Amino acid sequence: MQVEEVRFNHNPNSAANDAMTIAVNGASGAVVAPEWQRSPVKRDPCAYALGALSGAVTIKARFSGGPSNGVRRIRAVDANPVPPQQAGCAGFLLWLLQAILHALFGPIGDVLPKNVAFDAAGNSGLETFTLNAPYLGANGFVTKRNTVWKWQYKSGGSWIDFDTTDHTMYVTVDLPTAPWVQSGNPSQLPWAIALDQACLWAIGKKTKDDVAAAITLEVNRVPNVSYTPMTMFGFSDYQLTSYLTHLAGGPFIMNCTDAADAVTTLSNLLGCNLAEGRFFNMVTRKFLTLSGNPAVPADWVSWAWGYHEICWLNDFSSNTVWDGCLQLDMSDVPNVHVAKLVAKMPFSVPDPNDYKTRLIASGLGTLESFVRHRAVV
Amino acid sequence: MQREITMKAIAPVLGHPREPGLLLVGFKAWSGPQPDGASSLREQLAPNSSRAVWDLGRGRIALTVTEHGSVEDALSALADDMEANQLAEVPRGPEDVGEISFVHPPEAPPALFFVRGNLTMGVFSFGREAVDVEPFARRVDTELRARPADAREGNLEVQRGERGIVVKPRYAGDGYVKVFAAGKARKHGAEIVLEGDGDADLYYVEPGRETQRATAGRGKL
Image: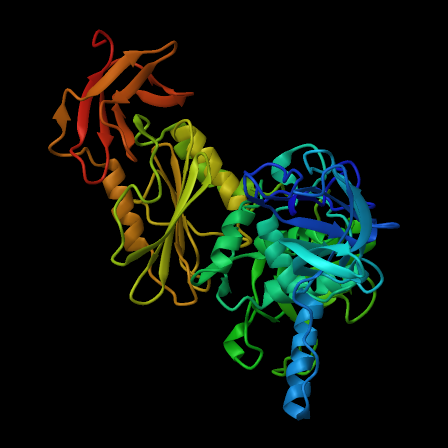
């Protein structure tokens, strides 16, 4: 007996009980179930949005080689469970490490048993299975999981192994928001290559605020990036493919628009609700430049800017901002700098620790009339 | 930098471009001269836009190229590009580079932006280590303006289209078409439209291959 196919996004119109709709990249088109198929071989990823799930999570699977006109009770369990703890301190530490890695990157859960009927040729229909998946419930968090399932059928009182399948699964806090879509333009479906980066940067985060803060921090601290005033990854569209390429390559440069695009686009991919918005005409106070070292005086800089672009919660009316391009100086003591990452800070409120107050030395900082979500290319 | 500010500088050139008959079709960031370093990355950013990055002994240099329909379109697009620059003011670059050029001030990482023919180009110091970008920008600009030497006649087919001409190299690879028209030249879809009297010299340039040449104009097709 063997597994012929497994379907995770078996209802493309909903992500309440199954996986959401994704693409591998901007040119691939939607990943269409079955995500796992024996022949021809198919190994596509899937993704779950925690906030969209309600009730039981199900998959669908089909089998062959079963008993002619018979019934088998079938389930799937973790093929690589954490081994038992060994004696001694070293044994405990090794077990603890394995347990943590398993929790962070291991299976989403098990496939609960059900009776499957086979026809005269030994083939099943497409059967719905319910998952016992604690990491798709209250214990869930952002991650990329590798699930290897050992499929078993029951014979007498024992479970007999008959096949193994492996699956790549992303978990986000909620359904992706603009520019990402769940239907329509397939180039704007959530990209797996972007989920790889976003899930790595926000691993373990459970809330939208934590996700946005983590992505902002990571965009700000990319080790091979430095600042230039020119937009390098597109102004009408966001060249996300190029940004992801450069992250994995040699030194590169980018500006505030690129940082706002990265924070907004990757945070929203995980379910946040950010938008890019600009404000105009300012001379800044000193701030810590992109990827700068707070201990290096030359990394504390000031600019005369025609505009600066940052991320806003929903739109300008929220007065709540994130900025991956810089870190503010929160010190009021001359020549003493205290760096602060801008994550969920108030903008333009009467407070000495307000973003606008801390950034702008002179100039109006007038808001543009609209916020945007640049399409990804 | 605000578009209005850039356009004030561009407007006089827009009315009287120095080389309105120069048109480049299919030119990529890696089609022209290479800086003294190792090619690191080639990116097709959009159907009409590409970027190449080179690793130098110290630092990196990047060239971004975007193809437009005409010199005028490129000049207008440069103003749009400069709107995506955060600086309140971007100074004018060297007078002899491009139809017009802008350059980052000394306090910013080196970058030079210019228009040549129907192309907008940006040359960037692309890493933490500052690299002087002007020599490479000049090399690119000089090569774009130059008529290829030792071009071979006969392998470049020129056909009449609905509005202009269609140029078909007999042996085409990853090269580009270079047009020197006596009047104005512009792209219209896959066609090249020549305005005004006089002939146009057409070249198909592909690194590593012999350049192909043809002439087009009234009475030549």
